[in-house]
Length: 454
Image (cartoon, rainbow, N blue to C red; front, side, top):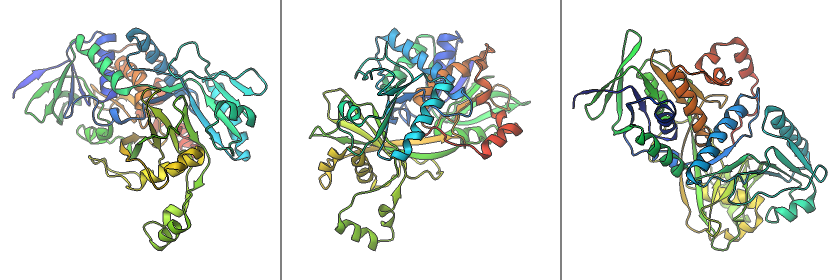
């Protein structure tokens, strides 16, 4: 293979790289954009996403809320433009607790989200009548949140939740979509504007005089270019090193489990359901004795963290639901195929049964689950990196953690603005590498609170 030229080379054809290509070619009119990936587009981690989105983010500051609101604006415009080919809904995120001591936390979270721009809080009973979310629509629906503190009202709208539930907080500008269909729609539009895809690995980035000069591929091709975008997902740190840049990101393994539900226990019209209480799992006396006798299994008897969550998957008439619970968050090196805890499906199901007691009917006879997932490539404070790199002509769209699908549209737009020298949104400085050189930001990091990760 020989040398050819490109205006922009993007390493990584996941949702971040595809969105960058779309915004460069379709929105900014840049010709000769090349996407490079050793795998087919959208097949490493993007297609294995939970596919959810939200504008529900904690501070400090309102940058994440403004960033996500912008991304959701773009998602909704794309849904309208395409006839909602990627099935965007706005069912919301429903946080639930059985602990009365957590009610003030729910109130504070709702007030903070409103202050940061996620929308107004409505308390029930009190402010107005609660408006349930439809299963399929996203237009003309409430934003903000609904805090429901009346047990009778909780039972009326969410009868499937544990009777111990004392409060629910329904964040409204949230929902999910088909990530694969969104990505393919963006890719098709980008290809119509001349974007090329090359199936090959990036083996090196040639830098001369502090500038990007060329990109070397595993098939022997050299792409001469002055603009290179690192959108390599879990491999972004490795690609950064090709240019002598050590990116402040690490990977966490996150796994989701798809369960069949032949008994129809899981509510098909539910929002994303999140149990906010830590818990110990319900095991039989015999099971507990077996686990206690094995050093490897003793952890199953301990307390698990808050945050087990689930949503229905597929059509309303379907019978699959997705369950997720990140109870291990140690940094790891990305390895494919994934190596995950073989006990995870059982652990996730039992955790969900605390919130949805009807799932106890599957204890001991669990339908064969399907487990997949990917890696969150994240910064320590769980905020993205979308910015120029210290090498002239090199850019990064990364650190997208577990919010790559929901953030991709705004991240791609921001990346394209940097590449073309277009006006930047006010949140742009928040996502630059230089933030780690700011003494005030370093002080924030020392006392950083909630990261927004589920």
